[in-house]
Amino acid sequence: MTAASEPGPGGTTGGRRGWLVWSPPALLTLAITLAGIGRAQPWRDELATWSAATRPVGDLVRLAGTIDAATGPYYLFLHGWTALLGASPAALRLPSALAMAAAAGLTARLGERLVGPRGGLLAGLLFALLPGTARYGQEARPYALATLLAVLATLLLVGALRRPTWRRWTGYALAVAALGLTHLIALSLLAAHGLAVLLTAVRGPAAAGLQRVGARPTGSRRAAPSVGPAWGWVAALLPTALLVGPLVLAARAQRSRQLDWVHLVRPADLAALPVGVAQSAVVGGLLLGLAALGAVRLGRRALLPGAAVLLPVLLLFAAGALVPLWVTRYLLFTVPFACLLAGAALPGVRLAPALAVVTLAGLLSLPDQAALRRTHEWPRSVLVDYRGAAQVIAAHEQPGDAIAYSPRDSWLLLDLGMAYQLGSRLPRDALVVQDQRQRADLWADECDRPAECLAGVERLWLVVAGSRTDPLAAVPGEKGTALRDAFTVRQVWLRSGITVALLTR
Image (cartoon, rainbow, N blue to C red):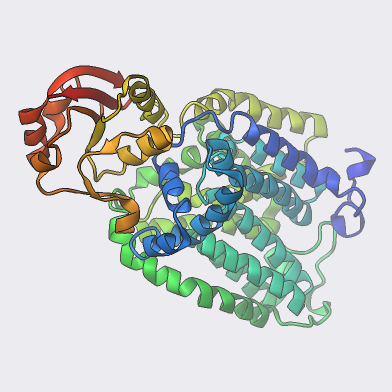
């Protein structure tokens, strides 16, 4: 370890040299997440983000009353962002890249506070090199922001428990409120925070593993805090309850529609969690093994980061066994704490071998890093090529063309995919009677009498989910009958996960 990164008084690096701990992970994460950030086309979740964020504020509020209330604050933030920087894939994803870079730096800073400078640095570097960090740092969804706020709230909690003042608790309160507004599931982190607060209130910071690195536990001889830990923590949660409470009620009412694609959790889902959040089987396994070793090495100091990993996972697993809630990416905010434990497994080794382990993790992640820049679908063998389908239409469309979709009400959001890719060149939607904005929804309404709505259409583009050599046969119900009665297939183009057909009278 160089002299520049040796711990100062209390086990942390000096103020002038502390940047040597947090800046390398932050800069490395920023470089990785910005590399190819606009290459993968937006997938269905990002299309929902684009559709919501680019609506007028009034329409966005109405949407939150119908669906996606839990994501409404994020959409509102991105509404202002896109008004300034546009809605290209890179512009939509840039806030997530910046959030992940900041999360990496704060992970290193938290590790410096809890396990020492070297452990913090290694934890931040491990986090930077995970494919999951790049994957969600390149996605226009709130998970990267939630990850940043989870680490920030925990870092502020450590400071407030060591030196409880109203100023410190106020900062913590703001971070937790922002966390809840960004991602409701991430508030399960408060279980770990509550455990640390309880042990600190009863037995002091040392009991919660929060004593300064290198400092001896002081037991009952510690100085009396200006604000009691328990009272300060409870007071800090009041703004969250007031701000997030209505959001919880709205999201609860929308759950059956919002998560109708989620099944009750199974033991296999828990086993697959490391792979899902790391976005790599090999690197996820390596992270899990190092985290287990680090927890053993840290002993009592593993309590807060260990609880920040285990308690949210167990709480969501228990809830997911009763109602469909388990979605792997919802637990992304636990990854920095797992990295912190993993980083703590390495400081006992000389710096060069420790960095070699981190480098190995980076090398093992390279295939997954390349794959996630081709598609954001998971598993990555599944790709719905909206861009390829749109290119076909753009190359062959003629004035007066119309377009139709099947299915119209699925989570593939075929119409939003074509609207995003084609923009003003999108043919007229032949069957729509109320679009997404008018319905305050993510799906449009189609006319009840498709044969009448199709009258006067001579050329129709039909976009169908999946690979269909006979796309007309794949359209069910009255819409399919009307199409088959009035049109013949002139040409079919098969793209990954999607079929485009040109129909003529």
